[in-house]
Amino acid sequence: MEDTGSGLDYGTRPDRLFGDIVSADRFFVRSHVDTPVIDADSWSLYIQGDGARQPVSLTYEDLRTGFPLTSIVRTIECAGNRRVQFGREVGQAFEGTQWGRTAIGTAEWTGVRLRDVLEVAGIATDACEVVPESLDAIRARRPLPLAKALADDTIVAWAMNGEELPPDHGFPARLVVSGWLGAASIKWLGRIDVATHHVEVPWNTIDYVMIGPGYPAEGDQARGPAITEPALSSLVELPWPAHLCHGPQIIRGRAFAGEARVTAVDYQIDDHAWQRATITSSGEPGLWARWQFRWDARPGEHVLRVRASDDRGRIQPDSTPWNQLGYMHESVLAHPISVTASP
Image (cartoon, rainbow, N blue to C red; front, side, top):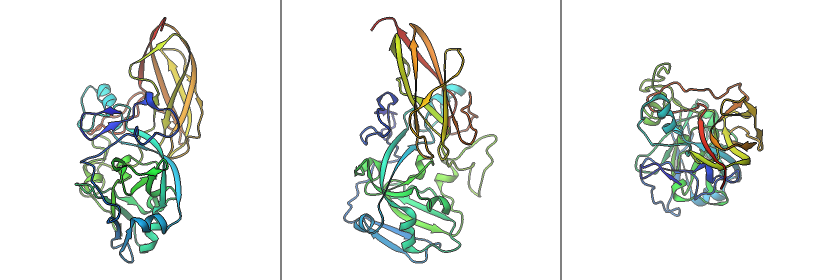
């Protein structure tokens, strides 16, 4: 794990990625405050609000045995991923967790569909938002449009990679919101409000929003538009900087497009022409795509650039427009690689 220096946040090193799924002990940890200690036997999930027909309280046992089971493999990424690289690009240090390329990971999440849980309370015809709330000290909240809350792959999870959720990843239950920023996948879930009006909270008005020129504010209190999907991005499964021996190499990496599908990944060595990498996994919406290419590495100093494309026609750009909080970095990175003539 990579320590960001916050005492709470730890990243997944790209050179320690092996399979499609990241093990729980290597999956990045993002927490605003200390991990709460929660007893599952006394825990309850409360569903309420003016958009619910009746308040409901569900125990841990209710959640595990009272609804159809579902498992999804999905990628979660913090909106501040690559904040350090963004700062270097624009020549300033951004406040916030100092993520390198490490605030992203994929796991198999098992639980129940959020819509099945909400149906127990009954959804009013004029309901428009669902607001999950955490049981940590700051009671984190991130509203979801009703359509996203009812999606097939928005789930209340109690297991990660076939094991009980670890405390740092949301035990006893967390939300998994496919293709959206990590802040939407509320951990340590304790309450869900169903609302008939737009809800403004700190996590969609002053944080996890885009603040700056070209980002008009939305709502009464918001400083900028709320982030939904993370940026289109790619990463190389090598240390930064990388050191390789000369000769044939297979270079691997990942690309992620949020709710879109990764359709292509191209690479460039030094100033040579861009070439197409081979995508080796599906890269479906909500899930990263794995890619690879063969390179006959010659001794010397090299720069590798990788750019992803998706089914919306987006291509990673060379630069990212500035925003105050250093979110949504999507630029093509110049990855330094030193190749030696002998081991």
